[in-house]
Length: 420
Ligand SMILES: Cc1ncc(COP(=O)(O)O)c(C=O)c1O
Figure 1 (cartoon, rainbow, N blue to C red):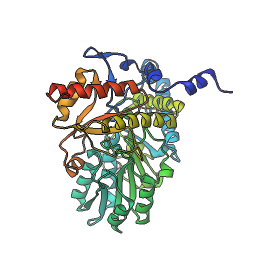
Figure 2: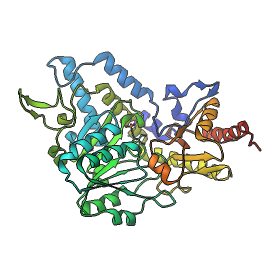
Figure 3: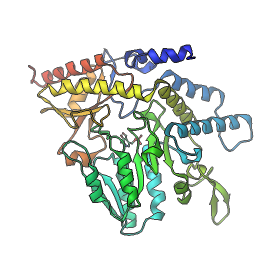
Figure 4: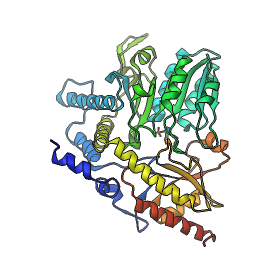
C-alpha cells in the first residue's frame, strides 16, 4: 500500500505546487515575484535539504574518520551514508568508487592530474568544442605538461556531434575521450552511451562531465559506459562545495592521489609515505560532511518525485518556450529548435541587444537569467557568438513564468526603442 505521503507526491504537479518547498522562491526581486531561470548555473534548495544540513550542524558536526568519540563516529556514519546514497543514485558498483570533491571542476582537475602517470608523449586526448571550460582546461594543461595532442570534435549546424565525426577523430593513440552529457549552452544531450562504445573500441578511457546530466537525467554510469563521471551538488538542489567523481574501482586504484595530507595516508615516514585505500586516497583534508548530507537529502527529494516526471515537466516548458520564441523575429536561438535529445536550457539573443543588457532589464522585472559566454568560449567562437542570454528550467518553474519572461522580452526591446 502506498503511504499518504507517497500518494501526495504522486498527484502533486511539478511547477507551482512544488514552489512552496523552496523558501527562497517566495520573494520579490525589484518589486516583482521572483522568476528563477538560472538553474544551469545553480539550483535552489528545498526545505528538506536546508533542514538536513541544519540538523547535521546542530546535532552531529564533528571531524569524521579521525576520532573515537561518539560525535565523530556519527559524522563518519553521516558522510558514509551519503556516499552510499550517491553510489545507489548513479548505480556505481561500489561505494569506494565515489570520491567526494568540491564540484565538477575539481573532479575533472583531480582526474587530469592523476591520469598524468598513464600518459606518454604523442598520446591523444579527444574532447568537443562544446565543452565547459572545466572540461577543457585540465586536459589542455595535461597535454602541455606531457606533450600530448589535444583534439576537438566539432558539431553540425544543429549543435549536435555525430557518431561518424567521432569515429573519424578516434585513433589508436586516443587515450582519453571526455564529453559532456548535456551542453550547458545549447541544451543538447550527447549520445554518450554510443560514444563510449566507440571510444572503448579504440581503448580510450571515457570521462563524462555530468554537471548538467545528473540533475535532470536518470543516470546509470555502468549503462552509460563511463569510466569516470563528474557532477556537482549545487546544480541538483544540493549545497555548494560538494561534488562527485565516480571512477571504476580498478582504474582509480591504479591512479596516484591528487591532493596530499591528512586523511589519505596509510603510513607516513620522514621520507616517503603509503596511501590509504579508496576512497580516502583521493580525499585529503577535512571533508565537507554537511555538503554530503545535503546532497543525500537532495537526491532523496529528487528520487521521490522521479526523474521521468521532472524530465517531462522540463520538456513541456522547453517546448512551450521554444514555440513562442520561434514566433518572435527578433529572437535568435543558439541551439536546436526541436526537442530531440535536448534538455531545458535555451540560449538566445535579441537582435542588436547585448545579453548583459537583456539580463539587467529582465532582472528589473524580477526575472533572473544568465548572460555571457557561459564558460564555453570555444563554443562561442565556433558559432560566431560573442555572448548569449540563457534560460534554464527545473522542477519548480512554471508556464506562467515562461509567459512573464516572454512578455518581458518586449519590454527589453522597448527600452532600446525597438518596440512594436
Ligand atoms: C557542463 C558543465 N560542466 C562543468 C561545469 C562546472 O561546474 P562547477 O562550477 O560546479 O564545477 C558546469 C557549470 O556550469 C557545466 O555546466
